[in-house]
Every structure is written in structure tokens, then in C-alpha cells.
Length: 143
Image (cartoon, rainbow, N blue to C red):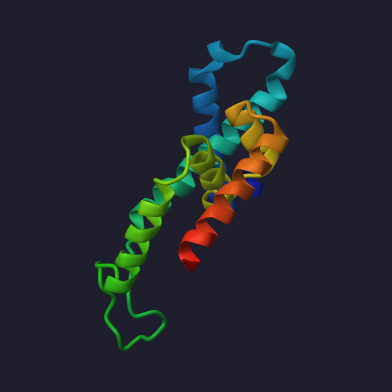
């Protein structure tokens, strides 16, 4: 399972070790021993997500694209900053539940069933929250 989340064999080994360490540290939270395999899969998935998030945070936003003659800048382009600020302001107009479902689905790339396990909401509720949030955002961006 770690290989599925990792980019290379070395990363998969690191991810497996990190997930195993986390599993050992949090083993007391396992309520149902018959669910051990599923529980370990969740531990590996969350470890992979945390690793990916840490990697994204370390990666600076660069301007200049693929042009080797343009020196990259650690500052985001002004237009990008304006767009991000506008989007964040719009997200504040959603309910907390809509915002969380939308973020997990579209920004984090989680599947609906994963969101359901994480949030304890029903699949239909999650689908409705995401659809409502997307429609509202689309309307705000057009208008």
C-alpha cells in the first residue's frame, strides 16, 4: 500500500517505516482487533498525506515557468496572490461542513468514501455539500 502512495521504492520504504512507527505509537486507539488491516491502511494513507503536505509546504511557488532564462522568484506573482486571496475570501462564505467536504474532495483529492469515514457524514450528504459548494463558488466567480 505504501508503494501505491510513494513516488519511488525508497520513499515507499520510508513511508512504511513512518507508518509502522505511528501505528505502534497509536496502537491503543485500535478498538476492534478484527479491523487491524483496515486500521493500518488508514495509518499508511494518513502518513502519505502528511508527507505529501510537508513536501508541498517546502516547495516554494516559483515564477518563470519552464523558461531557463528567467530566474525563479520565491514570491508568488501578484495576479496569483490576488486570485488566492479572492478564493479564500469566497471560501469563508461557505458553511464549515461545505468548506471541509469541498477541500478534502477537490484540494486533497480524497474519494467520497474516505471523506465519509473521516467526517462520519453519509456519502449522499458529502456529495450534496460538495455540489452545493461548487455551484455557489461558480456563481460567485461569474458574478
